Length: 72
Image 1 (cartoon, rainbow, N blue to C red):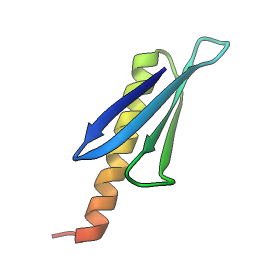
Image 2: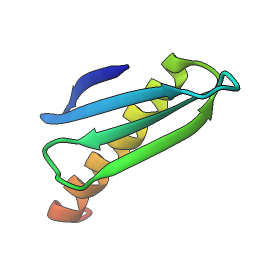
Image 3: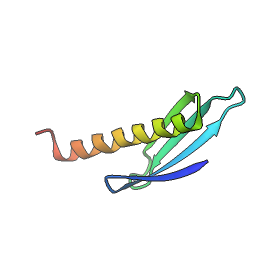
């Protein structure tokens, strides 16, 4: 399944995939930051895989924003 989310103005595309053993993996692509892709694997449900990918993408956005402005 494909999902689109937005975090702090950055668009995130999440793709979830189910394995034969019933576990799920997910990939999140930051559409506003070309080449930035984060992955999550071995989640027991699609919802957990989706949330894990979104969380990882949010962390990446936060990291990129902090690196531009520096720590206070």
